Image 1 (cartoon, rainbow, N blue to C red):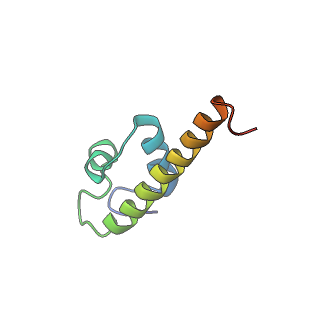
Image 2 (cartoon, rainbow, N blue to C red):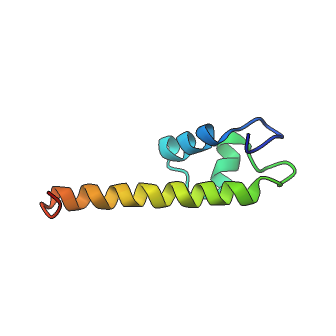
Length: 72
């Protein structure tokens, strides 16, 4: 459980980032309410957001390279 105040776990957060294209803590808060009460989960939310966006970028770069025929 990442956000104990609202019962939001890591998988839910990662899924929302992917599904809704979330890119900020404020967007996560609006979508899931996570991080909007006591704030103790904000550092972990920030880390999850950064890691998830970095992973998405890596996958996107690999797909783009593959489409251009660079990656075989």
